[in-house]
Length: 139
Image (cartoon, rainbow, N blue to C red; front, side):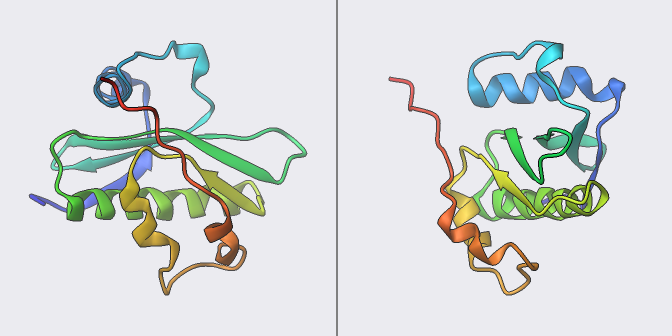
């Protein structure tokens, strides 16, 4: 990794970079209306290297993360670190919105390295029961 990772809420200026990142990972470019209010980016040396969107509904105590995307070509170690940074950001959103849990859907098998982490928060211990989803491989 070249620099420190910074997880922050995305801004309108990030949109083009975020859409390019998502398109590289999912082979499609989502429309603007599909993005929820809570979105995080991971920045490294002024470049966006990770993104995740938190979908939540009023009066629902569980949120869901989708469109999780990490810059292509990253090493396994980098992916684990970027996912960890996004998880930390989601923990802050979980507290802000008083959610009981957040389900994380990701195409990255590296998320498994976080499922047994010693720093799991209250309510996260059961995450092992929640699967993660991988999009079908393109032939």
